[in-house]
Length: 80
Image 1 (cartoon, rainbow, N blue to C red):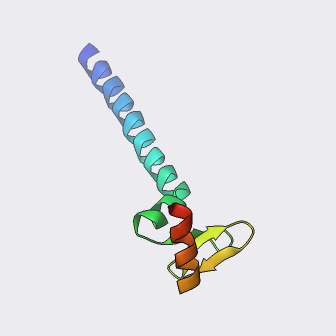
Image 2 (cartoon, rainbow, N blue to C red):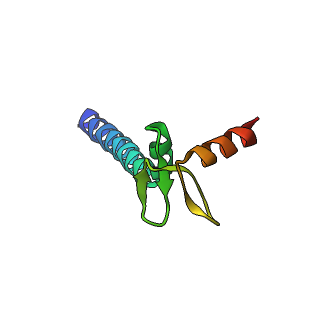
């Protein structure tokens, strides 16, 4: 009888741990859109909440900085 109680307590603890891990992973994936976009080589648009591949960068003043030769040269100079 005692071993059955121990088994069910262990089962309950394992269930809580597994459920907590699943909830943590779901929250991480749901909140981590910006990092996902960067991982796949795109820019996150916080206004439209999408990954964009037509922007060189994104900032609050200009929004999407389009990919043009001038913008690419400007960005390269900033990085040097």
